[in-house]
Image (tube, rainbow, N blue to C red; front, top):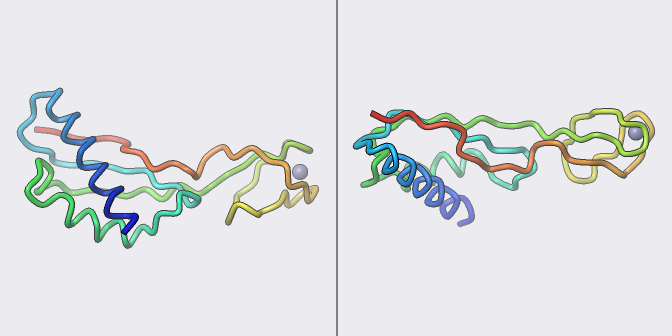
Length: 113
Ligand SMILES: [Zn+2]
């Protein structure tokens, strides 16, 4: 399962961070997940519950922020929301676009004790 390896990765990242700060416990963490990242948020929630067991964040609460994908049209520079990779510009119908956000899966913040 794709989400489980992502969850394990996130927990590893948190552990590295906590170690650097010499923390014994992680209280909170936040993750940004883009709508184009291919991650199913419900599945990630479920996977995290498994991944945090016996880790430094076993007692942590977490928040997953869903980042709506946005792009800028390369033709008319219009900014628009993307529902998927094939969304064309709503203004000029152009397909050329630069994706500004929405592909990321990243650890946004952690709170340690
Ligand atoms: Zn356009």
